[in-house]
Length: 216
Image (cartoon, rainbow, N blue to C red; front, side):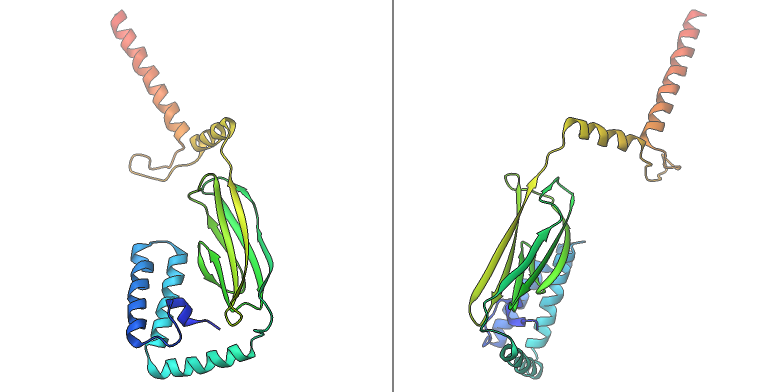
């Protein structure tokens, strides 16, 4: 069961004003207009909206609190949390390369995958690394049992791989032969190499006629 209090970063006895302040702050931070085409921020914003709509309504909050309490009582809180699996499809990657991580936790009611945020007790996430820090990108899985105040943590470090001169040459060669988007200047979407060859041929023809005109 989702912990809306945790989503808003407030205590279970938070006042209406506390709920409003937390919502305003987080909704500004995660609003989709400020983070276009980012699924993580869009999901986080929806969670914040959902939490606020429930906790700001007295009757809905009362019903939610009862359900949350019932869920907590039925949950196996006497057993410490654990991480069953936490894997990545690769631990060496280049910038922009796709990474897939999978995880499964046990006896945890709050699960976070950093730097992304709250997640389900088990799942999969696909993402691309745009920046490495000192050649590394760290992912941490936090599995928390909130009643016992215990957290299990496990990390994965992705190491940056730099392109060799051969790979760079191969990428540039592939780019030359790849079809390009259709534009006014390139209506047929011809690859760069075709336009380069056409340009060279035109230059040769122009030089030929120039030499011929001088010789006459």
